[in-house]
Image 1: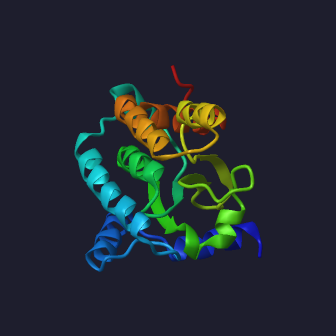
Image 2: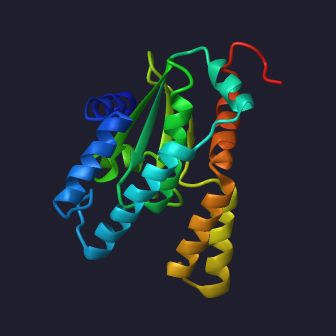
Length: 209
């Protein structure tokens, strides 16, 4: 299947942010998590993530400087995110991406579930793994790839790499440290790295200061 056809099919079965949150809450009310696999652990993570996202939806701030950069995006774009409800990184990153997309009507945020879109996921593996979340920025008209981001900001990635080198495993302590990193970062690294990636493609109406 051609790349653009994969994008087109994924977009057809994608969800808005509000629809995505609603679907996850419906699954939780049934005692389920999203995705092909079901377990008590995944359900527990999904419940934690719902609480985190509720908080972040209310507290995430986009600095004025970043608002201005987002408003300068000239071409209509689709921000396509691959995710699942149990993913701790996604719970921290998706509310940030949503707030960013809200700053410019030219940005259409669409969300798909990883396990329902394996063809798409296979195009954006991280070191051979199906790591999420993954943001793919597309030109809305041509469905050409502008850039991508994920599964986590660079410093968060370093934190996990360093922990694994020291302890040989990513355990609950590592996950707690990662969540604390996100708490202190307040979504700024996610914002800045996405904007930097788009800026590199020179798709703004005018050069950024």
